[in-house]
Figure 1 (cartoon, rainbow, N blue to C red):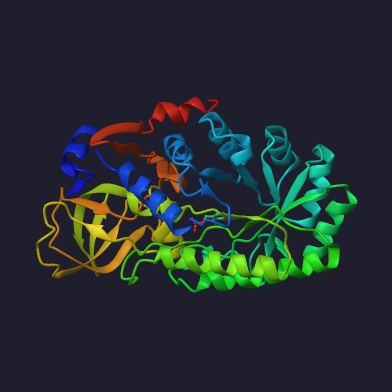
Figure 2: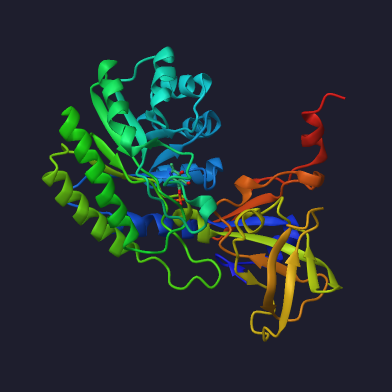
Length: 408
Ligand SMILES: Cc1ncc(COP(=O)(O)O)c(C=O)c1O
């Protein structure tokens, strides 16, 4: 198995396992495809890379250099975006239950602030008054691949319920703010093309009501991210060109009909840009014939938590056995002392042996960023393949890193 022209076995020999490997060319290709899909002669479109998906500075920089702004959720993410040189005007800050400290960091950095609640404005005004404000609005409906990543609807903790959105903008008007944006993000990992224009259509109706009641217009309308990628047995990839075409059509039509001003359309993809460009490489440590058959590997939910968190399933490749028949049904687990540390249940794979490499693909989004040193199994190195060369962009965590934070 090769990743962007480099043999996985060579990478393992050099850097060990477990190991995250990223194909930077794939990220650039994803960026180009998305740009083309959302290209319009009449609507101005801003794309913000949702760095929560993978906040490595080299990756944030890659998307900035390819024409994307950055979507941040915390002062830490904001600091990374600024450090790699993203222009504050191209940074969107969308917090959740934002503290005064969070709001102060965003205000001082002069980035675009998108508030999570009506009360967030009161807190922000204690810090300062921006010229322009946006709210994340919960349209009362959500859609995500798993319930855990469905961020709209009546069970979601995010955003201002749409019934209260008029009060939210009214409060901003009363505070003397005259420039507005609006934001929605209803869920992640969606593979249905129709969802996006439908969700936008519904959101624009909500904004039309605000426009009608308060007389305000919007400088930007952000429909969030959520563009899915297929993982394991998910069917077809999303046709992003259909999504772009239909979203632009709905946007153009409804903005005019509802007299919403001359807004920019913003999108904030994370997973779509980095998900399929990442690989987690691990090694089989032991095969156990228990009540069920297990292969234990040196990665675990400490390295890639999506399977334990959402029961998400990643495709698996066994380098060197790509063409061997998948005739064994086996459970793949990690070394963590939790019974939820399972990557795959009853997966059909070629016969496995101790020492085999196991590669989890589609691991570039919400992978390494969610890793943790639980059980004091430390975080892996991250390797980028750039122009056919491997570059260690994060070294493997060591016990010295751990002890550095500890007062004995
Ligand atoms: C506000 C916001 N924007 C963007 C994203 C990125 O979503 P995705 O990775 O599905 O594109 C998320 C993810 O939950 C989000 O909450």
